[in-house]
Every structure is written in structure tokens, then in C-alpha cells.
Length: 455
Image (cartoon, rainbow, N blue to C red):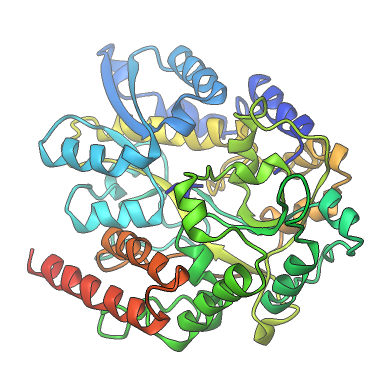
């Protein structure tokens, strides 16, 4: 799941792409750091070829191809061999390649995927190699903590900033006021509004709420309630905690009682694309900033004549008025079977500094100049009547935002997520009760954690 990793109007999306082609990221990285980083293989005259494994949603984009051209000009002795894999096949392909010892020098992953790779022993610590390319892992990414045993295994790209996207036309048609720009709705209020703006009697169904068949859409409300406590103090699964039960029951109410979201069986049977929100038949969706980045690559598939709005992510009633965020960090990592760690981190630093900004995302790397980021983003969204103040507040400019874990990333994270998603539909189709499915998830993932600890 891309956790993959969001905005808006087709016009705005086009502007994202144009900004990327204009090289917004070209001069964003500290020039001294860049020049120092180019001193390895390039300085010796030796040509190094890096195998870069990434999902096709990024690697096949116009922005990435333009970035790669710029990188090859800047570092002519570091060749990049991209390995592009559709996200639904990515983990399987990664595991096969790394377990077999096939060369991979740099790979992308979200929090679950990278911690899964760490736990499987696929990745190397990058602390020393980072120093060689003038990166201080303890300082250059803000308050980013070591991953395991006091060492860093991930080169952070961006922290997702989640918010509520809404279709202004759907709200207007239902004569319902737009969400407040600063004060988040509670989840209970979202459920009520979703029911009001749902219209299943028209020529095309309009559901008040869109969701993706990803874990956080079912358990994320609970993570806000218990501060991301996906594991018990002894490292076992905590998914059957009352907060997560409440979270799943909320979605069941929206989906099966209020009929304000597509039934999960229909969602799965239709193989619903996670960008389907942009077809205009939904009133709201909770999504991160990557929604816009990925929607931009499919603007021809999802043309629209309606305006979008953005508002803070919903919160539990106990957190009313607080700005909260599901914290998940996408990152790059160097596998143990790479023999070019230094060059791989040169590529990682350029990817974060150049490509990330070119897609309209705010990188975590603090040496990137960010002064114009929010202004350019607001300009790209002006056709949706979205203001600079809104963009700054929701896209990473609020230092007071409360971040909680988006998903489980410690013990057996890949098994945790996949097992949860394999079983949870049985609750939403009425085959099993919520306690039954969550206890089943706990038993299976606890066993996976124990097996992982033996190895």
C-alpha cells in the first residue's frame, strides 16, 4: 500500500507538473554539501552503476525521469539503473531480490515496509556512509530518532501530512456548510455530515465518505485515542484494545448503518482505485499530501469541473479543537548487498532534495531551502480558492500539530498490516463480530512476532 504516500484541482495538478519540469528542486539543496557529496566515485573517475528499486507510481512519473536526467548530468560517473515495480507487487519483488542476494543499492519504502526490511536483516546501518556525504543523521532531519540499537537505517524523504479533502460541489448540492478551515471536525461530526451529503438516488451514487482499503482508515481513529499504541509493553499486538475497537465500529456505522460509504465487498469487488475519489462521486476523504502528487499523474483519467477544499484531519471528541496528524515517514534505505553505500546516499540526498520538492512535497531534509514552498503550493491551488494560510497550516507549517503513529511499524509490521486487512472485511460484511476478527489478528501476528524474535 502506498502509504503511500495528496491535493487537488486538475489545474493545480498541472501546475505541480509544470513546476517540477521547471526544476524547482534544482537549486534547493545546500550547494556546499552537494559539491562535497560528489567527491566519491565521480572524483576517482570510476563509473558506478546503482540499482534503484522503487514503486512505479513514482519511478514512471514525468518528475522522476526529469530528476534522473538532472542527476546524470550532475554525477556523470554514477549511473542509475531504475527498477520500477507496481506497488501491489513491490514487497514480494523486494523480498525475492534481497533474499537471493541480487544487487540492490537503494530502495524506497514507507514505515511498515522499511521496518519489515530492518527486522528481516535486509538493510545496513547508514550512519558512517551518511557522514561521507556530509549528512548528519542526528541533526539534518529534525527530531528524527535512530531506528534500531541506536543506529539509523532509513534516509527520510518526507513525513506525511494528513488532512480532510472535500468536494465543494457535493456540499453545495446538499446545502451543507463546508468544514472549518482551522477547527477539525470530530469523527462523529464527520459521520453525520457524510450521511447528509450522501445521495444514492441520483443517476450516479454519491457517497459522503471515501476510504481506501488500508489499515489507517479503519484503526487510525483509535491511534489518535491511544497515542499510537499498536503494541503492548511486552511487544505483543494491541489491536484488540478498546480504542481500536471503537475506531472500527465508527467505520461500520458510516458504512453499514448510515450507508454513507461504499460497502467493503463492493469496494473490493470493483478493485476500487485509491484515486477514485477524484471522479467526483464522493464528498470527503482523509488523505495525505501525496494525494495531489499521485492524482497529478492521472489528471487525464480524472478530469473534473468541481473545486476541492482542505481542512484539518478529523479527531476524536476527546481531542476536539486539536490539530492532529498520522505520522508516517517515507524513506530510502541501503540494502546489505550493496557495495556502493556512499554513492547510494549521494543519490538518496539528491532524490530528497530535488525530486521530492519537484512533486510538491516538503522534504524532511533541513538543508533544503523551503522559503518559497508554501507560496508556490498555494499558487498552484488558487483555482480551488485555497489560501496560503491554509496550505501553510496543513502542509507541514504548524509546529504545534500532534503527531501519532499512522500504522504499526515495530514487531512484524508487514505481517501485522497484511493480516489485519485480510481478516477485517469479515467484520464489515457481517460474517464475524469485531472482537472475533481483532482477536484473530492478534493471535496470528503475535505468532509472527515470536517467530521473528527466534531469527
